[in-house]
Image (cartoon, rainbow, N blue to C red; front, side):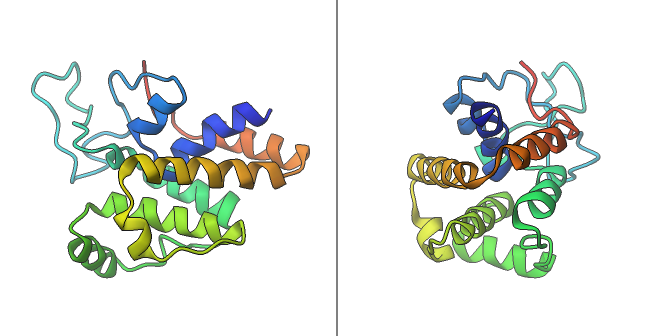
Length: 168
């Protein structure tokens, strides 16, 4: 069960292609959401479907469904959606990153706090992508290790209700 949940939660927290690769999944044709669901996502003229987004960075795989799942079942609080769109945009601009990266960093920061650890947004933003992925992996494993078998089963079942994030 641990391996299954780990494979599901890591893409949730930072929802990146790097995580998918890290766990041996190929992203192939990313089919996260349609362009209509995410107006900031461009569609590729060479894509098989006009609804398949172009992934410009690994953080582009984040979806509102994942954020909702994280806030409902992990954080148990609106740690990301409670931030106003204006503040989210301002943070992204200040750090010269995408809003999706800001969301991933906020989820990671919250996960760390659930594990009794602290890092500032600035510290997390400065991490190279590879180190950020390692940190999220470590924090996810620490979180999973604290769950009872019943909690793991529930979390896994709820996660399976989400749209399939990647297609091979």
